[in-house]
Image (cartoon, rainbow, N blue to C red; front, side, top):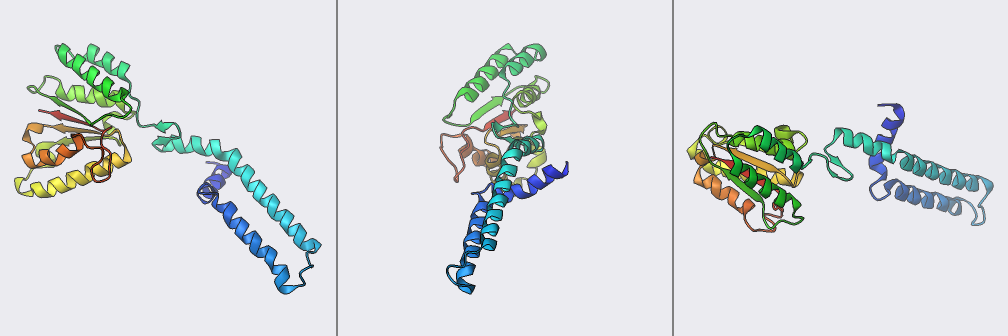
Length: 245
């Protein structure tokens, strides 16, 4: 990162929020202009004070130019290392065409599943304000492709697939092994789901071996996939839940 970019980044947080620099500068300028009347006669607006005012104006103008000139460079750099961009959420790709292609080319013997998955996901993403979160449940013996389909959904909806910050994968016996700790798991799971959706509205939660989830954990998840506008102040209607049984 060159010196100019570093300088821009250092000053950015002090400037963009409500023109903080300009407000502070204006306050300072007003205070400075009041000094002559306090120490000299009221008509003592001499050349020195005029020169200072002009210099202050030039300084503010220079800062404004620096900010405007470097805005696009800062935005480009920020989007290259962070997840969120000006146009939306860079973590999401929502490639329905790619999902349809992968299901047709890579998943064999599950024609009905292909149609249902594509239709459900496509319809959900096309709805600007869905009534509830999308919940999918895949049933079948080991080796029938449940995990494979979940992975293809993640790969085609999120830039980083299963590694995305928006995708969360649970294995019931591994993450929730002790029956006597169900109450603890419920609290932790609810807190995590809420925090995850606050960070990424289109979060995907995948629960493998869901048939082994304690009923108490199922009850803990239900409010997030039901017809509620908000749960504890968080909107879950754009999130997705996949249960592999």
